[in-house]
Every structure is written in structure tokens, then in C-alpha cells.
Amino acid sequence: MECVIYQEQTGTCEEIDCRQADGGCQVILDRLAALKPDEFAWIRMGEPRYEELQRLGDYLMLHPLAIEDAVQAHQRPKQERYGDVLAVAVKTLWFVEQTAEVETGEVMIFLGSSFALTVRHGANDPTVEAARRLAEQPDMTRLGPVSVLHAVTDVVVDAYAQSAVQVRRDLTDLEECVFSPVREDLTEQIYSLKREVVEFRDAIQPLVPVMQPFTTAREGWPRQVLPYFRDVADHLARADTEVRALDDLLVSVLDAHLAKVGTWQNDDMRRISAWAAIFAIPTMVAGIYGMNFDHMPELEWPYGYPCALAVMALGAGLLYRAFRRNGWL
Image 1 (cartoon, helix red, strand yellow):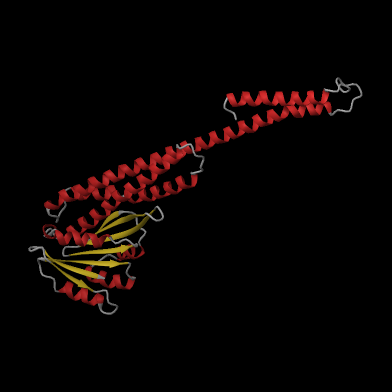
Image 2: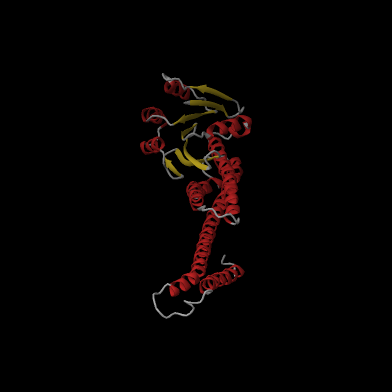
């Protein structure tokens, strides 16, 4: 657990590291009780225990349902108003290059009149980068706790855009493989990337209507913050458009690959049929002369055997040449 106290007029901040095992929550509570009118606190928690968050939530007057959502995670992107506290759930995404997979997490953001509380789940912590940006922009901290909401969502949406670039690169590589002359079954890779894009889409699309109300005037919010949220909403809309395009393109790539696999199967069947036809001629001739009849032509002829072999070879050769000319072999 960490806490940063921001002084709105000067834009300065005081960091309080309370990650020690004993007394961490009490240190936060004591400092919250001593907040001045022109100060607000940002408490950062990572995968907290229920008892720990409940103790802090009781002081901040958080709704029990909000505490339960923050501890259990696995929430869709949403915003809820619990009295004077605004709760916003956001999905975090990051691309793992080693496995070419999109990993997900979650951040729950609570905003009050004098505090911001973020509860993070997952290996990636966007609040670290958000805190760094706020430290470099004292003008933003003068806007109050809402600046934390902007900073966190801005970092999360930037990660969406970066992940979309990585997914687009993987999709481009798949396209090149699909339309290359090399015969390779890519169905599993395409399906795996499709699953990643679906997970990506499920994080972004529900967040679009959540962010939209933040771009217009809200009671208790400074109007200076609205352009910043409009910028985040614009980046989110572009990421959403990109993910939709990736989703549609993956469907087309899968259809093209399946059509190519069908062409391979047709080519294989034609080759098998061509070879079967070639071997049918010697089989037919051998079958005829293998019948046990007393009176058959050329049985007594000394050149009958080599002539039969010549007929077999000539017929098979003519068929082979015809199939090669037509592209069957």
C-alpha cells in the first residue's frame, strides 16, 4: 500500500510508503485524518486483502458492494456512483512478446472529494506510470482527485494502442504466411490470435460508453479537465476502431486460409486420381492377359510379352504427359 499527498495550490506531493506488514493501513488513516482543505490523497493498493480494504473503505465511506468488486476483480469496465464516491472499473492490457499473448488485469478507481483510491489486479501496474506523469505535471494535480482518474485511464488507453500495434504486426506476419506458396497449416495460430483479439475487444468496447460522460461538464469537476478526458476518449475510440478492424481482418484471414487448405486438398485428390488413372492402364492390360482362356490373341506370338509391356508403358506415359500439361501432376 502506498499513499501520495498532493497539495493542489502548489502541485507538490508527499509520498508515504506503507508497504510494511504492520501498521501500514493505520499510517494511511492517520494521514488522511490530517489532510488540509487544499490537499488530497491518492492511495495505491495492489491485490489487497478484504480486511485491509474494508478497514480503509469504512473510513472513506465506500459501499460494501464496491469493496467486494474491488477485491474480487473480474469486473466489466463500468462506472458506479455510491453517494459522494465515484467508482470506475477499467481493464488493463499488455502484450507479452515472448508468448505473443495479450495479458489482462484490472484497476478499480474510487474518487471522493479529497481522495483517490486505486486497487490494482494483475502483473502490470499502470498506476506507477500514472504517478510519474502526475509528478511531472503539477498543473494537473491542481485539478484535484479527478486528475488521478485521468492519469490512470490515459496510461491504460496508451497501453491499448501499443498492444494493438503488436497484434497488428502479428496479424501481418500471419497474412504473409497464409498467402505464401509454402504449405503450412496455420489454423491454430489464427485461432489463438483471434482469441487474443476477442479478449482485447472485451476490454475496450465496454469502456467507450464509460469514458464518454467524462468528456462533458459534471458537477464538482473543474472544466479545465474536460479537454484531457476528450483526448483520452479520442485515443480510446481509435483503439476501438483498430480492434474492430483486426477482428474483421482475422475472420477474412481465417476464411482465406481455409479456402487455401481446401485448394490443397483438391490438388491432392487430383494427383491421387491422376496416378490412379496412370496405373489403371497396366493393371487393365495385365488383367486381360492374366485371364485363363485357351484361345487369346498373341499368346503364341514371340513378341507378345514385350509388346504388352510396350503398350502399358506407352499408355501410362501418354496419360502422365497429359496430366502434367493440365497441371494435375
